[in-house]
Length: 408
Ligand SMILES: *Cc1c(COP(=O)(O)O)cnc(C)c1O
Image (cartoon, rainbow, N blue to C red; front, side, top):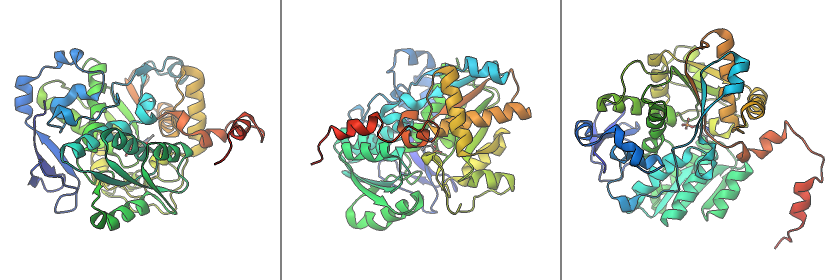
């Protein structure tokens, strides 16, 4: 099982015991889980993965859960790696791939992070969790909390996609709709958690979600036969997936599983909320708060990511870049991807398709490079957003169906 050893401050390196629930380090920075990778290297072989579970728990030795009975799994991870044959042909890209996280439980890759976090909460005896979320993290938290028998208190912006609200209600979470952004939701959790006895599981405010998300990095390596792609396009909100993948690369190098250069990490954001893109272009190491954040890509509506300094450092170290995409361009790229290769992506993933188009055109991406796009969610979760492309007459089938059900 796990080879975990301790928690470590991402800023100062200060160590903390992993057997105790903890949010941030003393200096207020995110905490990272560390492992005895030497021991893992001796006792674990990548060839054995083939007989492991078809979920992210195939990487259990580098996940923080100690007791198998704590694992709360709905089949997250081990998602399809799809070659974008027809879109690639149109873009002149011979080696363009998409990791389709849209098939995850609750329709987004947030399932990975929350499966890990809720499993750890269960192991640590936590009975109530709380988070602020712009959308999909809420759905995943609600689902895994339901499966674990943990109470979930969720704060979401009032204009969150309908799918996220309905899922949370159906999963039995205690939902508060907030007139504000994810930052306001997070603040409400922070203000009330001590009095209410909630363990806060906001993005990067606890060390476990990143561990779940890092399995995207392990999986990309395994599915590409241990040769990492040349570039990865990642729709970046809080940046947890990006930081997590980078951590996975570091760990796999220590395990002796991969060698050679790491991928260029490409941050994709929405024009209506692009704090990382702005900081990158201005040569800054941290972001400023992005006022009036607005985009249909709810997962990208994070005005000031807490891990901004880590994200910017990774992009620069990797020789990557940052791209902002408008909502209409993202949805149109989503439609193009669907039409050509049969994947109906979330606008966040679709924004990466639009960014790829632009980067091939500018020559930043080369035709023969192996390029991996992360589609982090299902297009089906964003019916309001895609309706803008395909409006129907009022009183259409959906409205009629609604009329069949008598309100209580
Ligand atoms: C949360 C979310 C993102 C952003 O993820 P981070 O790892 O926090 O940057 C991207 N896409 C979708 C669909 C999301 O739900």
